[in-house]
Amino acid sequence: MGYTITEKIFSVHVNGKKVKAGDFVYAKVDLGLGNDVTAPIAIDQFYKLGAKKVYDNKKVVLVPDHFTPAKDIKSATQAKILRDFAKKQKIKHYYEIGRMGIEHALLPELGLVEPGKLIIGADSHTCTYGALGAFATGVGSTDLAACWATGSCWFKVPQTMKFVYKGKFKKWVCGKDLILFTIGKIGVDGALYKAMEFSGPVIEQLPVDDRFTMANMAIEAGGKSGIIAPDKITYNYVKAQTADRKIIDKKIKKWEQFLSDNDAQYEQVFDIDVSQIEPQVALPHLPSNSVSVNRVKNITIDQVVIGSCTNGRISDLRIAAKILKGKKVHPSVRCIIFPATQAIYLQAMKEGLLEIFVNANAVVSTPTCGPCLGGHMGILAKGERAIATTNRNFIGRMGHPESEVYLSSPAVAAASSVTGKIIHPDNV
Image (cartoon, rainbow, N blue to C red):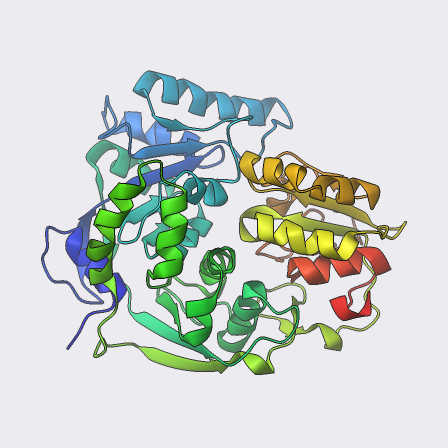
């Protein structure tokens, strides 16, 4: 019986011992990530363990991105805890305002994510990095502290569910629509503690930004991880983010060993025809409440959020700008756009996208998680309704518990900002 990509990655990280789904392992970790919400707890636990130095100052990543720029004294204090720890431990990968971005867009952009790596983060959307063929998953702050001290973490190797996407996209359909449709099909606990392996002819042609979006939202189906086998698109992206590209050329053969075997064992296999999928909208209050945008009738909105670790990349901003160019945001709507990193912000500026947004009466923010978690810079009041390209629409996720959040792609969100109600992009 063959091995899945997930089983192969774990085997490499337990000194080559062959492991299968269901095995409990103590595996070496390539990167351990924390942010301004979760890392202060990990830092406290790190010292309570009696640890003095992190196991490798090049394998610890700290990104204050959730409540930054600091919204109040408490959030400023949280960020300072990270800053002081990074200085004391000589952490190489510490990224603050001016150098930072939303963590799950920033790490791949910096070339820190490669196929075959095992990455943990005290943030549930760490699964984003599976888009590049890494096994990446969220953990608790105490597990992160133990990893910083020892370089390893315990895992139960997850069973894998395979999703095979075939067919041809309809206009405006993208990776966000695929993952919303998939979550709608299996439910928010449909992949509980499973690796979601995305494959098939559609995925093989899918741009890397869309792959990030799909892997990012594996957790919304309860997944332990989302993962896509590395291929030419992966290699080209990783090479572009790496200063010494010859190193990548040498690594490609090694990465090819991680492809799932033809006789690998899957818990379930789903075949999905994308030609039947329309642009999706997830209705309150679950990402699994996914329906075609054409079924959403006369839902007025107060706010639009375009960005986040899910859809704040340059391709997302280009789609939004294509729709907003020459138009105005509806006067009753606040449209807030969050480029996911400084580099994306700069690229959007060079391409004139920011000018399009400002001329359309949208506002553009520095990279931050901000409203996605109901933190700041876009909180909803009682009774308000938003459509967002973020990943969760739970009760109170973006503010008041009696507000509502609808999830969509950048195309649907941008179109809706113009009309003041949720609408298909073709209707703008």
